[in-house]
Image 1 (tube, helix red, strand yellow):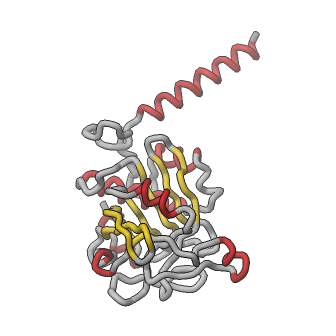
Image 2 (cartoon, rainbow, N blue to C red):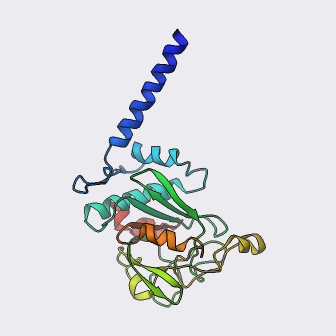
Image 3 (cartoon, helix red, strand yellow):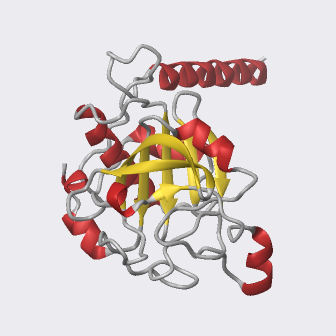
Length: 245
């Protein structure tokens, strides 16, 4: 009887925990279908909701930097509060602290608490070879730009179906639209190259994704979602206004 009662109590606690966690809001109450805003507190404390999501999706095992995840939600909350995000249900994180031989694009459905896509993504050719370590906001630099973006409109271009990215950080990535920094597909972003040469191909600064996934990815994140490119870069960490908020 004691064992049976213990199991029932544990099950009841689990149901209660899931109900409480699911009912906590990630986003503002003005958004009809959204969950309430995930609040990331000042260093070193981290919101319990953020830690729980990171753990439940096993993002650590997938090698997503916990700092990248924490930073992502700091900026996400700031973008939300300033009204820059139109679709708050999805967040995308590019972790450039990982080499391009790793799957370093993470797209998360916050409403359903699911990892939608986990795949390869390119960095700029002048940012580095296997790993991105040099970043720039300058036109013609052929480097990636770190920071927070909001996904914009889609179009058909030289790379086919593509999506513009609107950089929201002054002096860090706000030249993205004029530089033509977009998400597009590329034949050089594939696992075969990882096996043969140890890294994927590089772009002119765009986050290019695999040809067999790009349409699904763009369809899911287009039209005003938060897109964050993280790198192990002290200059960015100390100059981003979104990380200071």
